[in-house]
Length: 167
Image 1 (cartoon, rainbow, N blue to C red):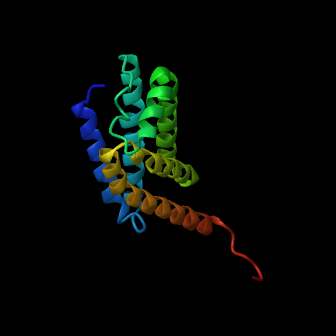
Image 2: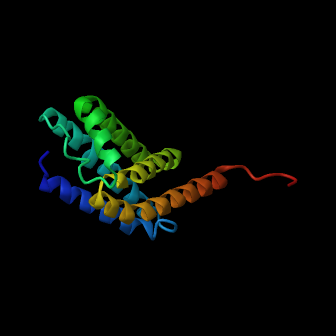
């Protein structure tokens, strides 16, 4: 699998935008939108599209799990994913596209997308130190963005609900 400078740049730009959007997201609608776009583009383009390109070009993903922290991760990857790369990487691409689309959708859908991204991060660290660094950098901003989206949705619902009489 060839490392593409364009995709690495995209990952870094989306990661930086996600981190930058997280801090002001609880008070800025613009930051919420920047976070959504950064996460959505990261997962749709930097994840799903990249996997589709790799599969079409014949990538096998055989070395991906080599730097994993645990030998069982590497062994399982080699035994299960590599011989069935089209199936499993195809499913991964679908998952990444789905969470990316959800992240871009706003409201409850964004929250669901962010939960998927966080779950993805909680598994990704197993694959080595580079992935661990990425997860350490991204997990807190993702949790902050999720909380900000939850607050935003709650505030929107509260402002559109009719006042309670006799409460």
